[in-house]
Length: 113
Length: 111
Image (tube, rainbow over all chains, first blue to last red; front, side, top):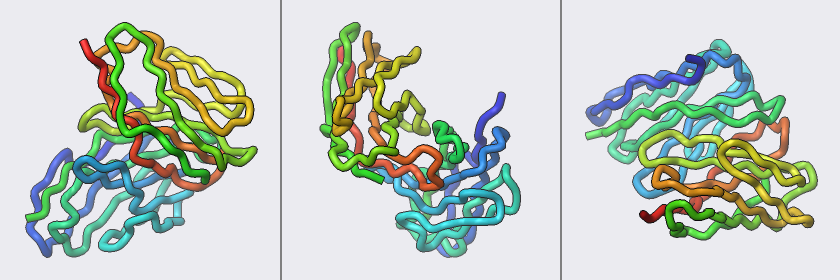
C-alpha cells in the first residue's frame, strides 16, 4: 500500500543521547515535512524540504536536524535529546507543485527521560 | 499564508449535519482553503480543498462565501467516528510553503 511510513512507532530515550526518526514515502512527492505535537496542542513545523537536496527551518527547529539525500527519505535527528523534546512527531509529504493534499505518517511517540 | 480563525470546540448529534466554520478574512486571490482532521493519536487526514467554488467529495462538502473571507465544512451525517480536531488552512496552490496548522476545532459527535 502506497503511503508514508515512520519508524519507530515509539521510543524512550535517555537525555543527552542522540536519535534519528525515520520517514519514508513511496509517492514520489517532492515536499516532505516534520511536525511535533505536544499534548493538547496543534502541530508545529520543525523542518521541511521542498525537494531532494534542500531543507528549510520551520517554527521550532532548534535541537533538530534533517537531511534529504533522496526523494523518498527524510530523517529527523536529535543530536542530544532533552526532556522538552518529549512529543509525538509526525512526518508528512506532498506534491507541492500540484498543491495536492499532504499525507501524514502514523507518528512517533518519543519520551525523553 | 493567510491566518484562519476557528471556534475551539463544537458538539453535534449523531446523524445530524456538522457545520464547522472558518474565517480567513485576509485570504489572497490565489490561496486555496484546505481542511484536515486529526482523530485522537493519529496523523492528520486530508478532507477537502477549494478555491472559490463549492466542493463535495465522499467525506464532506466545502462551502466558500462569495467574498472568500470565510468557509464552512459540512459533514452531512456525522457519526461517532467523526469526532476529531478539524483544521482549516489556507495556502497557495503550488507553493512550496509548508502547511501551517492552527489550533483547530474539536468536534465531538454525541450519541
